[in-house]
Image (cartoon, rainbow, N blue to C red; front, side):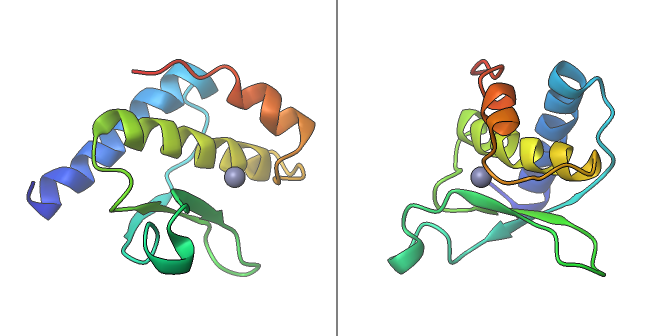
Length: 108
Ligand SMILES: [Zn+2]
């Protein structure tokens, strides 16, 4: 799939998940493909959410492990829950609240 349409697909899925699970309240966030995830020591890393003080937060997805829309949705939702907690100024690790919110997800 050409890079451009794949990127559009990510944001389409982001918008859909945002409406379905977050009342459309999550702001725009940069979502990047990560080439190192899914290989070597990161072979099990599907994605991550990064919030470095002074920088805009980003979500990274493994290009290797998120090939299908359903995989993108599942991994993206996980990272969006981190972002949702962060945006609400809450601890954004794998907290109890994180796990509760994660359970709401239904596969697409
Ligand atoms: Zn996580």
